[in-house]
Amino acid sequence: MQDHRLSSSSLLLFLLLCATIAGSLVFLASCGQTVGMSSPGHALRGQVNGGQQGVNGATIQLYAAGDTGYGSAATSLLTTAVTTNPAGSFSITGDYMCPSASTQVYIVATGGNPGLSPGTNNTALAMMAALGPCGNLTSSTFIFMDEVTTVASVYALAPFMAVSSGTPGAMLGTSSTNSQGLANAFATVNNLIDTTKGEAPGLSLPTGATAPSTEVNTLADMLATCVNSNGSSGECSTLFTDATPSGGSAPTNTIDAILDIAQHPAQNVSTLFGLVTGTAPFQPTLASAPNDWTMAVKYIGGGLTAPTGIAVDGSGNIWVANGGVYPAFSGGNNSISKFSATGTAISTSSGYTGGGLGAPFGIAIDPSGNVWAPRSNGSALAEFSSSGSALSGTNGYTGGGLSAPYGIAINGSGVVFAANGGNVSGILNTGSAQSGSPYGSGSNLFCIAIDGSGNVWTTDEVNPGTVIKMSSAGTVAGTYSVDGQNGAWGVAIDGSSQVWVSNSASNTVTALTSSGSVVSSYGGGGLSTPENLIVDGLGNIWVADEGGNQVSEFSNSGSTISPSTGFTGGGMSKPYGIAVDGSGNVWVTNNASGSNSITEIVGAAAPLVTPLSVAAGNNTLGVRP
Image (cartoon, rainbow, N blue to C red; front, side, top):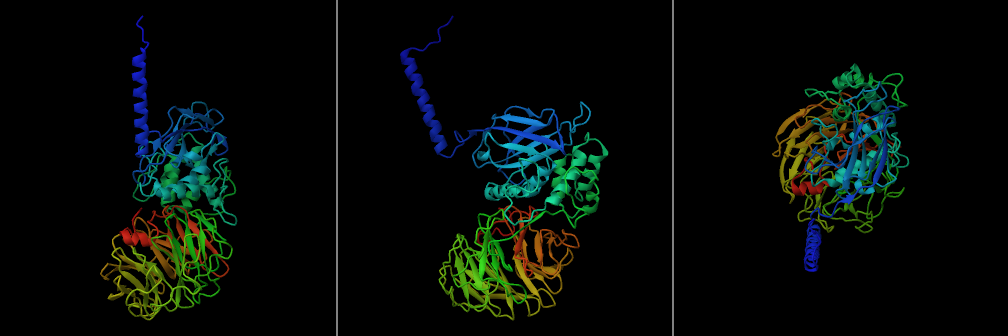
């Protein structure tokens, strides 16, 4: 037998070699490589149910969300096969590695027998639960997967998902520059459902918030008709047919079916509702078909009082101006409010005050993350830090022609432009007036936006249906007619530098080229006294319909996406301000007297670069981050 023992000199050489390799590994890790950055996962336990019945023989997979693009392939983390036992239980004995503590992970169950005759395998069965940061998983983590967790997880993550190409739930990812938006979307799931029990609402739902739990149950009951079958019966084929988007391909599993519904919420609403049986497993359910299948949450607190303008900062926090009830803008509380990306009030019950703030109509975030709002009942602007501390002194920033400023917008250099009614003021980020301010003239200049070239666009509500374009230095480049009636109101810029204007009197929206030529005006989609509007990351137009308690959505070519009644839900009441965050959630302010709330339409839009001042400075308006 050959002697494999090392001589003392050989042993010393071997140890030195090991030390060199170890040092190299440490060096690689310190240079940003993945070597040594992964960490072993904890043992996990869970349960898979179809309705109230355990699923036997379902295949379990743990995924890390992709980072090479929206809907990109996720990474499978399990190194050994895991399946459920006859009761639907499963165990993962730590045989996975967390790519990093912050990596967003989710779990998927496919196939299996939902309590039917032995040997049944429902290949259409696919369910999931969003888990969040991998580093948050512990040995005490218990995961419940059912139709309820599937619905909520898909809705919140829909902007980051794509229909699978053979492996249900495997296409979920974001760009390398929007990890924050993805993390916020995962966190939103915990407002909607409890992933430890498979029930709605979630444990993280803020106090006083109203979640759409009955709608979640109803959607889950639609899936249950297919989940609790053999997969080849009429229940699945009917669900898949009804969920198929116009001009699209039919889904082949329940994750893709609910993804199609989430991404096309105005389609086949009544037909899909008809899939819910009288003995549906999740209760309570909706008593009748809803207006649409969007999913919305209402939040209160934080000093909200007749909220008007709304903006999103770079972390996904929501900032709201409490300007008073339209049209007199009275009844506000001279404050601004701040909410986390998941709707938890951060400001106090009085909001943030001071800094010269008074009856603020508009609100905007500068590239440094500071928050600006006008004293609309006076002649000043107020500036706040990201923590809500007033930076602008007792009287705010004055000068530059400021006079009852309403709408404000900020360019990539931090210059704040305010519409005063008769003209536009430019205020530097130091609080002093920009040279030559004020600029232009009009009858009632109200809303304002900055395009990717730094041009300033403002609407004139009275001089009928016009919009004025100015350079960043305040030079008027043109005045353009957008509508034959008074009422040009909101203004927003898309990724092609088109300018979109809402016309509150004629219930239309108008698209103009960057040179001011009218492309066309569009109606329908539920437009009813349209006020403010925003362009999402895929160029779709979202409009707050103050006259109809709803929002409308149009494609970039002007086709209606929302139904003739708009998208409703979430307690919307005279929605006024509107914003889209980096997770694809749509946020609106409810300006009706006594409402004192904001509504989040979960995962309905395409993620947007925030704040808008950064997007304008980088020329990334109307595109995904």
